[in-house]
Image 1 (cartoon, rainbow, N blue to C red):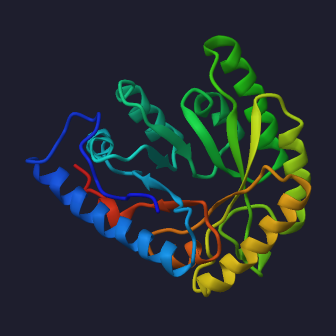
Image 2 (image 1 turned 120 degrees about the vertical axis):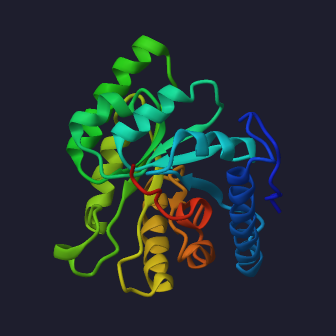
Image 3 (image 1 turned 90 degrees about the vertical axis):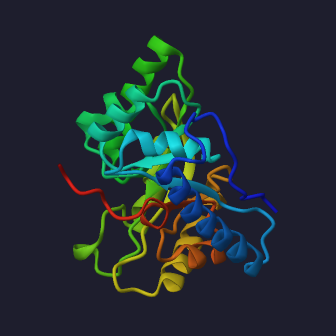
Length: 252
């Protein structure tokens, strides 16, 4: 069982700061939920926790790293690029989880360890081109690519993502691109739907994908409100934001 206990790390902001203490308390609650869900699912492999820091300042990322967090998720390139530029001294993996426009691929390639929202061929092609350029310049590692799949039955009202029938073509396109590594799938439970039903469907799509691409075993699913269901149905990555960071800070 993975030890989810918080610990002081490299971030440089430790206990004694009120915000750090608040984050430590919230983080501990979430880590205990993950541990309980892992045990309940009969799993020995705890999912990787990605803390989603959108709308929160770079200082909070520094605090989280000091508490032992090594994976951070961002939804918007402009905000992510700013934070990563400010926090170059931290050893942290940045995951881009928001909808990606092709013209942002060049920027994302500079900082992202993974992109978890690939849902159309144009994004694959743009990322392949951007990563090739970045690898020539900086020697960066290959980009982990998650195909975002829609779990909505009503395709006209979904929250982003490729249709299940489109997954294999996207997977083949990613695998054929130098510099891109097919990691697996990402999904969001549909609004108002039973998350267990949604993540059971996702597990089936993942099984179909692994039958053709055995290494594409990652499943990024589960947020603050439904992490237990995601763990039950095999999520390897959880994306948790508000339960750790709290409400979006007031502007101004």
